[in-house]
Amino acid sequence: MKVLKFGGTSVGSAQRMKGVAKLITGERNIVVLSAMSGTTNSLVEISDYLYKKNPDGANEVINKLAQKYYGHIEELYSTDEYKQKAKELIKHHFDYIRTFTKDLFTLFEEKVVLAQGELISTGMMNLYLNECGVNSVLLPALDYMRTDKNAEPDPVYIKEKLVKLLDEHKDADLFITQGYICRNAYGEIDNLQRGGSDYSASLIGAAIGAEEIQIWTDIDGMHNNDPRIVEKTSPVRHLHFEEAAELAYFGAKILHPTCILPAKLNNIPVRLLNTMQPEAPGTMISNMTEKGKIKAVAAKDNITAIKIKSGRMLLATGFLRKVFEIFENYQTPIDMVTTSEVGVSVTIDNRKHLEEIVDDLKKYGTVTVDEDMVIVCVVGDLEWDNVGFEARIVQAMKDVPVRMISYGGSNYNVSLLVKASDKTRALQALSDHLFNN
Ligand code: ASP
Ligand code: MG
Image 1 (cartoon, rainbow, N blue to C red):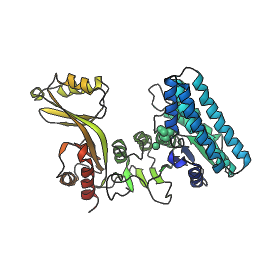
Image 2 (image 1 turned 180 degrees about the horizontal axis):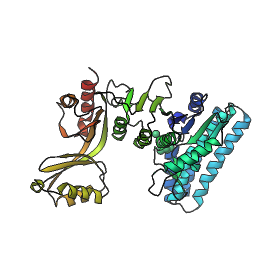
Image 3 (image 1 turned 135 degrees about the vertical axis):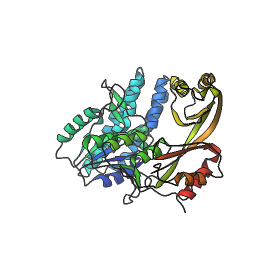
Image 4 (image 1 turned 120 degrees about the horizontal axis):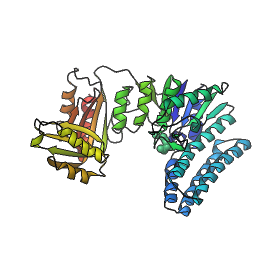
């Protein structure tokens, strides 16, 4: 069995839904769907109005969104019977959303509202498949997807419930289920955070020991550099899980970073495929490495670098601990670290507590802050005993001022910190040197 996940754009219109239906029929797999594109954002907007006690504002967004959904019915279904069923489905969910405009609105209600997008898209797809004569079965994510007291997915529970559900439908042609939504340890409706459908797919794949997890989007796999700003990028055919994790974290938008771990731990390959070009090979992510090969470059924006220089660091113990503790106190994660005998530089992307952090750091040394920086990360099989890759990377950057260089934290990544204004030429230079000659 495989797990196939389709994101919001892939199910963003009646036409696209029909396209997805063609791709998923014929094999008995589990299909994970996001909400139709824009829906979750609208549900967030509705919640925002309700938090602000503005039911009129909320109703306006609700009506507009409902209208959009009713508009899809004519195009998606061909029989009156199914048009009627779809109308009832949509009405049911929007009536439910409207009930929240009349009462107290808290975090709990918000999560219920946010869950409606995936419930509608999967309901609509399932009806469409049934109308086409496919015996598809809806697997309610709220019945098996669950997080524990630390808000982490509970793989034992997920596996037990999911396997049982699948067993109850031995005659099903295929299964449709919701991405993103779950219940928490207290049984309340919750979610796996924005963009969490990839995570759902990966958790489901791990739970059933899937043969493969497919993430369908509308680009032909992960590219070796950002195609929006760099000329001549090409899809990467194969990535190791660690390489994919670095790329996903450092800005490649195609895959949610949380999605990697369950697949990696259970050794289930993840394939990135393109709904617009289903025959294209896409990108395969697995535990296989390609010896000595540099695969891709990604960039993470809005980075702040902080340098703490102190004579007291020389031969002293505990200096780094004190520095890191300050970041921890302000719940600010550190991305990159470089050290010398007299100082340490770190980068952060959350500037919320920058002022307090700098203030506290001043107790330990001279502090310098560089804002508007970008982490450029080069990913591949960069095992330290492979020779030459550092030289190629540094050579590519020979005309770009580099603020920090970090290597050795993993075998798969070299990170460079540059000014945001140098981002484009840094990425282009790396592409030209590493991939295009
Ligand atoms: N619909 C959710 C979102 O927009 C989850 C997802 O699409 O992955 O964030
Ligand atoms: Mg997504």
